[in-house]
Length: 343
Image (tube, rainbow, N blue to C red; front, side, top):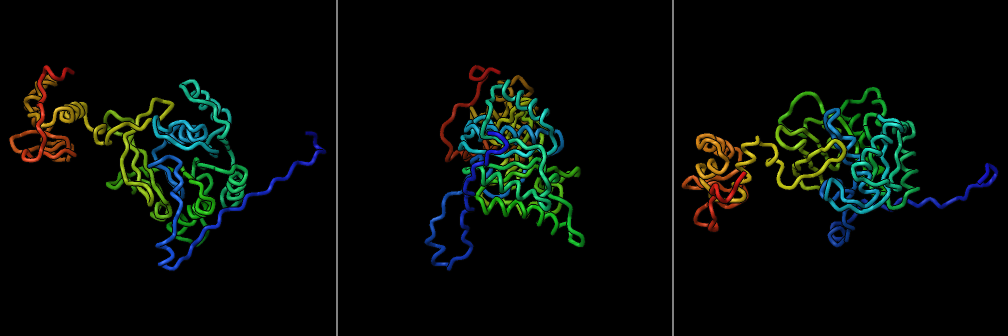
């Protein structure tokens, strides 16, 4: 097509009508469509925030999710997703760096993703960023996910005379309005504060106005033990949970089992594995199977029981935390012996 040829015009799809008011009896009879998931159990329609420390692998995690959804491949090593267009705004990267990252992913078994749009420059939301996002949505019917990496690059300056809480809430609200109006999940990549916190949600940098505006908050932390990280998740449509994650330098994978299994030391992990395989075993039997001192097994199991990682029943029998340990209700088990389990 030469420069004098007129470009064909296409009708811009209208944003779906979003009802906001009902009488109670009508609301109770209303049939709502199921929520639209980008990654079932983790990323739902609405506004989502993923926070983590610098150089932890947040960009690898988000880019891996983006490519998986764009191809309809399992995300995070095994979560089935629905295929569709994805916009990934890598605003701290260059085209060369993105290319190198994608080439590394393909060399590790990934696939090229034609439905994945990669963007390295975008105006802030107050300066036209909203229009860029909405234009992409209108050009990509069936859009499944939009990732902004990072939130700080697009939020814009805080208005003068506004509290930090109000500024955070308003900045996040610009993204949420788009997500709600168009029914497309948006994931904002963000940082955590340097100070430690008892509640993982308090790790998110900024005020409570930021997390308060979110439909879901995810925080990626490094684990002290065998897993490379733990992904904490909470939100309005997601079930609050902690997921053990492992990172091979290219792809993040969600591990099976509770995150607590991977946060313990090697000895605790070995003991927990045996207790799961042979519930009802005594410390001496477990110690013999592992080749450790009985006193070490007793002390470690006692500490694990205090933290809820195992359960102890009368008679010093140990069970997994989710299994009934009362001898009147527990099913018959075969305790571990060295011949049954060889590490």
